[in-house]
Image (cartoon, rainbow, N blue to C red; front, side, top):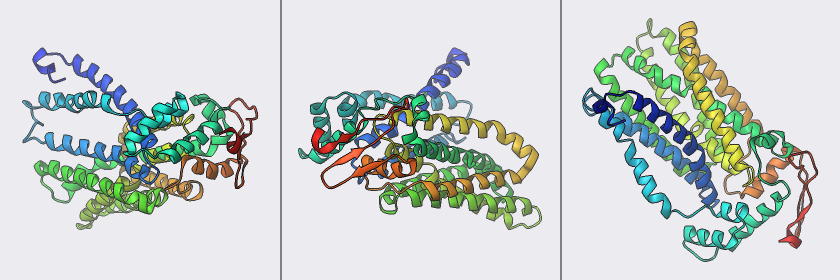
Length: 396
């Protein structure tokens, strides 16, 4: 893309964007899954939010570099597009030094020694017995089911509510209107008296707020938990959309309403940054075991990008037909997501994957019997066959 102007070809930009889009779709699923698998349970939420943190850092960096006074001009745009290759180059150079996911090595590759070595390297100590044992229990409980495909995930009763939950949260994340709020932001600031040439700097400040609040989520997710951040985040988004609708309708008659609109945008960004944006991917990691996690991320990622595409495609028509009342639709979606999370989604902080699986088993009506010395999991296999009984005390 950086050479497209010199080469006088726009086709290379289109091709490059397609390639980058494919990679972005893969990375948005693989990165949180990889980090979730190698994280200790007491830091899994914080580490799971880090990918979203660096997405906001990337957005802010692009906003700063894209200012008219820096590279957002006729002479600088090829350099701006070419700079995209630098983080990719760094990743190519650094990834060979990363350890493989211990869970992948033990559960999917069956290589316990390599899993132990990777875990020792990650933890910085030799005593990783408890985590290895927890992975073994997870492996034993899933042996009958094998690796899930997307189709078997949809037909497996034992993961029904986990699957519904990630679909609802991923749809809520994008259909709550985050892109629409960013789209409207420039006009909201201009209506409040911000000079047209200065709007880009205000947009950068919104990006900075996004980074700061996502960083805050990294530090508070393990103390407050996932559920409260989701409820608070979608709650702030819901309230902001409702008040924003009122403010946009009244700002031509009540002058100070334009400032309320700015506050609503800021509060909405805060809500999305602490809950709606980072937490759903953390919960995909935690609510699914190793055999079903890749398929779950595939479903979650597909719902995410399809919902993103839908908002981008329909919002201009919504705005033309409904005007400011478009935000009432986003408000209703946020409210519906809040109700679902409150009723269905459990708290998962400081729990192992197996403990979370037992919590969800009750809702899925999958019987799990547990006593002091013996753990027995009864699953229905993806094809409808009854799974075998696993006794950890004897088989492990």
